[in-house]
Amino acid sequence: MDSRKKFVIDSNIFYGGIPFQTSSDYVYYITPDIQEEIHHIKRRIDGLNLLITTGKVIIQEPDIDIHTMVRQKCVDLGQMELSKADRSVIALSLQLHLPILSADYALANAAKFFSINILTPGKKNFVTKKTIKYCSICKTFFDLKSSFCNKCGNSLVIRKEKIR
Ligand SMILES: [Zn+2]
Image (cartoon, rainbow, N blue to C red):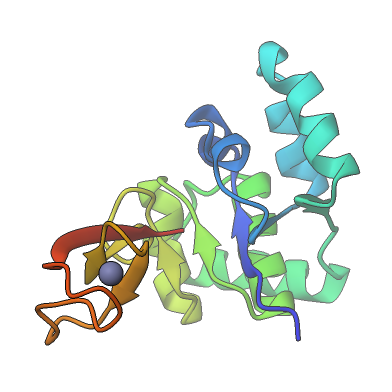
């Protein structure tokens, strides 16, 4: 089973450098319009090509009928501030049934009209921390109820583990 976490992202996520920092458990989908925007960040181009080669970033054009539906709905809703690239992100999210990761307020606002789950980097629903107990001798994790290691008797310490 493919347990990797997948998101559709826009170019502001690249400005923040997130695709370059997260582990291989994360896969990012972008549209050709977003790729075009990212190419304006000159210093990131080499890095982007590497991410595409390794399959961490996947470029996919949403189907034309989904893109057309999104554009029409944006007109109906008066969401005129969205760019063609923003709309392509929404369309790909709908097509692939994946959440959007974006720091863009206008995009986040529009996404809710499409019932899309949108995540903002740095917020608790993206980077979460789990509290656990840990034996520093055995390098073993225990649940929070435990006080002592069941192998060596060492007192356990509390650790906050970042889930990435
Ligand atoms: Zn121990």
